[in-house]
Image (cartoon, rainbow, N blue to C red; front, side, top):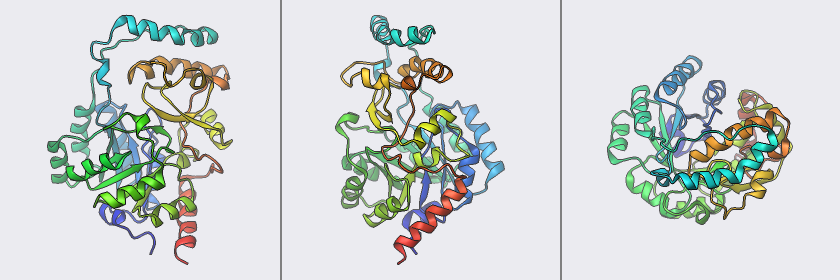
Length: 355
């Protein structure tokens, strides 16, 4: 059967369909549980959460499903250049965005540059809650963390945007590798070269990784339907990871404005304007006016600058200034229940592959 792959065997799931981890306020226990209960792998994007919030989220998950799920963290969750960040540079870059705040009639937020990493404390909680899968982006955890994950029976999954990154993950001993194509929504999780130098399409990346690494491959980026799933599996992937496709589901906690703009199939761009790290989002006025070459604040300081701007734009109906994540392929998305979407994906993929 098409759905029996190395990934389903390794992760203990029925179908090779994984929900893309969505952090930054997008977590929904109902969405995660719906996907896991339907035989896929639901995901908790926990990189913004405190250890206490992760504990609360996992308690909620366990009330809704006893199936495997994935907990995703960022190995590098604070840019190194934020250390001892010059106040004069902070003032200069903040001033570039002040006209947008003035237009919306809100003050520019006071920003503190001393932002500690949460990763090691988050890992301690991860070991406590023991999800079936620990996935991570923006680097590779220490050998000690990977070893302890193996001891606890937690499968590890790292994200690669190039074959060189995949080979490093393979050598580190991860259980599976995400082939993160440039079509994917959200951040480009590159860690060896700058993100702008690691823009490889999903279907090309699958084949490059298949030729270089031994571990199972999870295809991510631009996959929203059964045709995409079938193509990825045919090219050598062992599973797919889908984010935007589930972002418009009924269980998703994306704002009504976000869902509406996704369902209308808007154009996307790669921009640093939203968070300080390159990511794919719906094109808006700010991403259009803040050129790629423009220096913005390091991550996550740029996120803290833009957050009130985004909230005010939504409150005032300023659609041209709203900022929303989206994969490149956002055509014909479904506003269905997640379980219905899973059933449709499974049936249609089977119709294509089991001929």
